[in-house]
Amino acid sequence: MSRTHRIKSHSGLYHIILRGMDRRIIFLDDMDRTVFLKAVKRAKAKSHFKLYAYCLMDNHVHMLIKEEDEPLEVIFKRIGVSYVSYFNKKYDLYGHLYQDRFRSEPVDSYTYFLDVLRYICHNPIKAGLCSSPKEYIWLECSRVRDHSGLIDDIDDFTSLTESEMADFILDDCSNIHMDSTDRKRFNDTDALAIVKSVTGYDNPQYLGELNKNQLRHALQKCLERGISIRQLARITGISKSTIDRIKAKMRTEEPSPCPIIRSVRRL
Image (cartoon, rainbow, N blue to C red):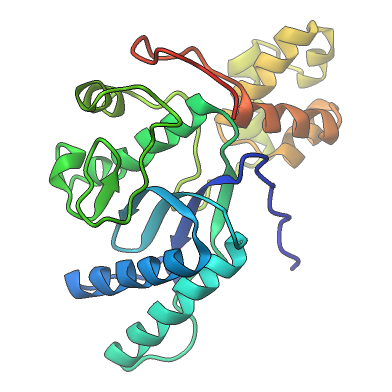
């Protein structure tokens, strides 16, 4: 099966997920996590990428980074080769450790950047590992928790103070982000039920009667509920290219900002 084309970020910023093969644990102890961060530090010195946040969970890693001198593929090859070599030698294993290549989503607006920071900080809380991001030692983010020297400052993206950031990151995320698990695939009956709950129409072909803004809102809600672009196009009769454009805009639009965000700009 061919690989899905990676969506290019106009800003060079990406939310990255690196996860274990078949959800395998990739960090068995704190030494493993320490070695991984050393691999990140070496790669950062060579590739000169910016790192704004990371969170190490048992079987996956979240990172918010910006390409500089080298592309993502080179960056994560540097990190992966180093860490996998260490891991396989330590545990007397062979072969692949990671699930295919890393996953990425572009970050092309300031509010989306902040929402990704918030999403990354929520990970250990959702897993029940802590009640505050400051308590989880394998998470770092400027103005939240930064002890390793790996993290770059976020002055260019927000004027939030440390206390304002502490309130901001505990609020609910404004967007749907990548997660570490595979999304559930709906059969057409389930997908049709979702479309009906969103629009009130028994027949999804009636979506064509909606005006432009109503249609866009309805399709966004269906996508947020987990229906794939291909399936949504098939059951509604709306072109895949139209839904593709709506999906792309969901990543770059400025949602209603949190009151403590004092300025909103495009990257």
